Length: 131
Image: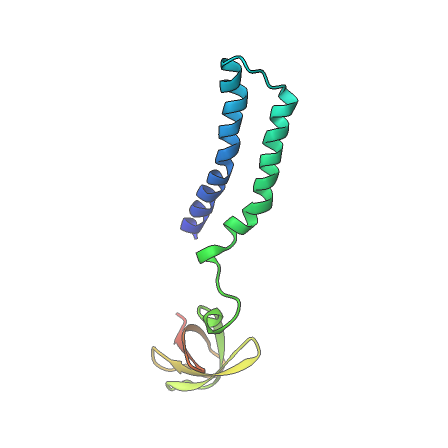
């Protein structure tokens, strides 16, 4: 989880780079060459850029390769399933109220146990015991 937070921090800092560059240009470079920009105008430009960042940040920071698929078989991977019919190694599990044929990849699992979905093969989920 630390790696994802660091990656998101770096993405956020990259989003903020334009404000820093524009701020340096407006408040340091332009006055250095004799072009004066009123303070309120410079701050307005920075505020507009910040507003833009806050509007697009959720899309940049909350999606992409880090986001788990929400539909299709891929959405099941990593989920917890409840064993309904003993897995020895095949049986039935329940995921979000739906019954699935399942195969336990690392031994057996008894009814009532929780297992983790590691893959989907056709209409069967491949699971492993937690622990």
